[in-house]
Each structure stands twice: as C-alpha cells, then as structure tokens.
Image (cartoon, rainbow, N blue to C red):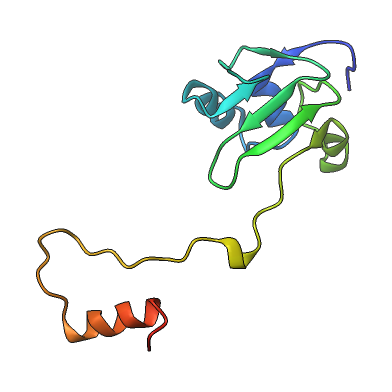
Length: 125
C-alpha cells in the first residue's frame, strides 16, 4: 500500500473492490457514476489519501474516503484498510416508500384479478 502517492480512480476503485473489473470501473467513470471530491471523475482522475470518492451503482451510493493508495488488486482484508466507508445506513423498512400499483396508460379497465392484486398491494385485502 503506497500511502504517499496517487493512483487513477478507475484502478483504485477496482483495487479496493468497489467494482468487479477495472473496465467496469472505467465505464462507470465515463458514465458519470463516480465523483472525486464532489467533481465528476474521468477514469484517469488521480486520487490520493484524504480524497472522498462517491460511487453510484446498482445499490445505494457508496461514500468512501481514501486511506491508502492501491493500484493492484489485493486481498479483501488489505483492501478494507485502504478506505474508510462513510456510506449512510439504509433507511429502516418502515420509512421506505410503499410500492404503488401502476397500469400502462390506455390499458383499459383492470380485470377482476388485477383489481384483487391492486387491493392486496394497497393493504385492503
């Protein structure tokens, strides 16, 4: 772990296991899903110790602070030491928005089965 240098953001996020492949990390950077210190990051954007990296992906946004610079993929234990995870915890289940049944516009009147499903979703069953 190089504590003084800098590394490309795509290589670093791959090395600390935020992405499965380096190419996936580069694609996420190009798509605007990675930010370094609040700024949109290109794959070659350098990161150093103390930088904040935000990664949006399939799940909730991950917020990490760089504690060590890695350019090669290492074990999960060493990767965990290279960053501090500041991701806020997910909201409790009671605060999550309820699923609302939506029908396609112009689909016509719901069938009896669809009405029962809508009632079940709304808790009126």
